[in-house]
Image 1 (tube, rainbow, N blue to C red):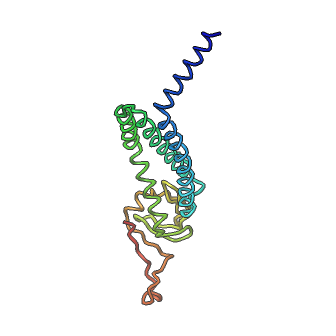
Image 2: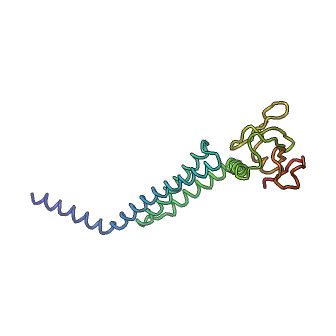
Image 3: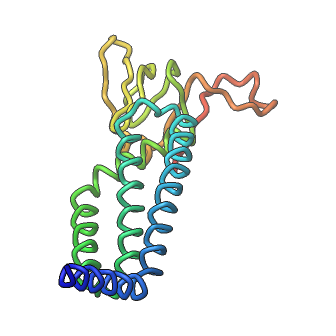
Length: 195
C-alpha cells in the first residue's frame, strides 16, 4: 500500500512540477485557440459580406476564401503556440513558405483571372443585358462569371470573352450613357477603360 501511495505522491509531484513549468504556456495556448476561433468567425462574416456585396455569394470562390482564411488563422495560432513552448519554428516556416510559394506560382494565372473578374464586378463597366463591344466582339451581356463574360452576338451566338481580356482592353458600352448633361442628347457610346 505504501508503494502505491509513494507512486501516487510521485505522480502528483511530477504533475505539479510540470504545471508550474508549463501552466502559463497552457493557459496562453488556450487563449490563442479561443482567440483564433473568434477571429475566424469575424473573418468569415466579413468575407461573406464582401461576397454578397459583389453578388458572388453562390460561387466556389467564397468557399476558397473561407477555407484560406481559416487555414491561415490555424497556421498563425499554431506558430504562436509552438513558439510559447520553445519549439524551433525555422523548419515549419521553411515548409509553409515553400508550400505558399509553390501554390502561388501554380495558381498565378487562375488567381490573376479571378482578380480581373473581381475588378470587373467592382468597377461595373457593364451589367447583364448591356450591349457592349470588347476587342471587336460585340453583343449583349448574358452572364459574368469568374473566368469569362458571356455575350450573345448579333447572330445569336454565345461568345465567351475571358475576363483577363476585358480587364486589359477598352470596353464600348452602347447601353450605358454618361450622366454628363452635355452628352444627354449625344448618341455616341460611352467608352471605358477598366485599368
